[in-house]
Image (cartoon, rainbow over all chains, first blue to last red; front, side, top):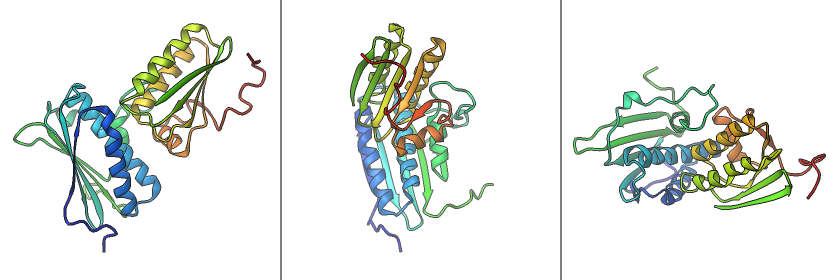
Length: 147
Length: 114
């Protein structure tokens, strides 16, 4: 039985104002704690979702503060699924690559943090525009079935 | 984010931060940190003991500071990072790139006082 039983997903609709990011972090942290993820995983999941929203604000909306991001949290028995939906400029997911970590330079770490934290990171381009990033973290780590 | 800069002596600065460091305030930290290098410092310390969270934009700000410190031959130290913040540096493979010390205690021995 899941440690957290909710009758439906939690949906957070925030403005693309960086000052709202603390709210997203708070929801991720409380949900992940209630689902009994280890503290290290909780911290990494918080960071991953924060970085994903930061990327949306920067790249999909070019730092425009008056757009929206809709974040959907679905707690399953074995995993937490997080959908991050924007309505901005879609990018080519094939072009997303974390930077070479041997280089000491500012920037480019966000995607590395996201991929390090989450078990699944997938992108969809919905027909009505924007992008949907889907992040999944299993409560007990599972190997990526694609490997 | 509360940002305070204290001059320990003519060429040693301590920047103290308080609050979560993210995209909303890392430009403020950057704008406070980078000009310090114009005052010909010998040592700049960032006190992170009251920073419970840092994201990649915060890390990027400190990397810029590190690059300027190397260019200008300035000692650049991050002090008092909480375990959560230290873990982010570790995840970025940057923990051993910075001089990171547990606290300000004993850090200025031999550097004189104001």
